[in-house]
Length: 203
Image 1 (cartoon, rainbow, N blue to C red):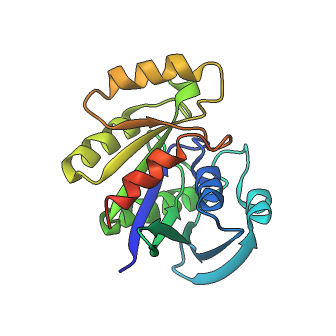
Image 2: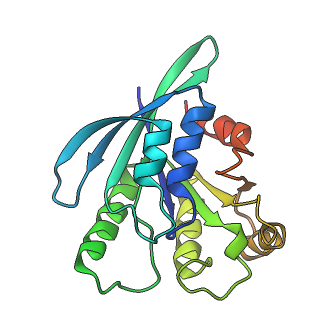
C-alpha cells in the first residue's frame, strides 16, 4: 500500500529542495512525479535530480504553484515500500492578492486531509526575524496545532547549515513546545536518517 506524505510550509522554507535531496538520500538518481495544476490536470514527468533542482528550486517565493507528487521507494526490512511526497505551494499569512496564487494555496489546503502523514518545514534561520513572509507565524502555529491533533505530523527545522539557525531552533522549540521538531539541512542533507525513520513508522 502506498503511503502519501504532504510537505507543507511557508515560501522558501526549503520544501522542494528537501524532497529532491531526500530522494537522492534514498538512492534515487531521478524523479518520477505527477504534477497537478490548479485546473485539475495532471501530467507525469521524469527528471534527473539535477534537472529537478534547476527547474523546481528557486530563491523566488512561490516558485511552486502546483502539486508535485514525487514517487519514492523507502527501504524497509529486506524490501522497499512505495510512498509519495507531495510538494506544495508555500502558505502565507492572510489572503494573497494574486488570484492564481490563491487557487494554488487552496489546492494545497484541500490536500491536507488526504495525507497519511504531514512534514511541516520551517526555516530555522528566519525564526528570529520579523519577515512576515518567511519567518514562522500564525500559519505555522495553526499547522502545528492541527498536526498534534492528527498525531501524524513532524516539524523540520530546516537550513541548520546557516549561522542564525542554531538560535532559531531554540526559538522554535520554545514557540512550538510539545511539537516533535527535527533539525535538518535540506542543502547539506543532514538529519535525513531521522526523517527516514519517522516515515518508516507509518508502514
